Image (cartoon, rainbow, N blue to C red):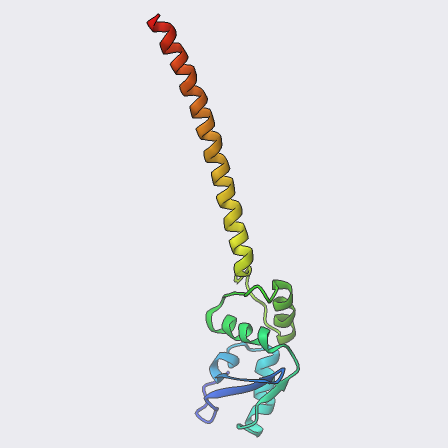
Length: 144
């Protein structure tokens, strides 16, 4: 979109009953998206009235975070499937690897990694212990 000094500085949305206000430029960068079309078609008629969208406000907050940062880590309460469904609704295609699993899922993965590391360490210690016993046996037989 062209730089227009008459363009408002912010975009207002009412998503699922909760109001959001973000920079116009953030939305305008999403050319071809439903959000950019809503802003360009209806916004300039009434700057003070938020654009109503009948979607989950919880997810919309993370859609805005994604638009601001190019990636997002979702909370446990929002699945990636739900997030991708809404991103599709808004006409935004997140890049591969830009939507991270919930913190709980990450914690589970870390625990699995730790468990695997502990299992490997335990295996190595047992092997080392067995080798030490074998060497002790050899040393005893050499001294006799």
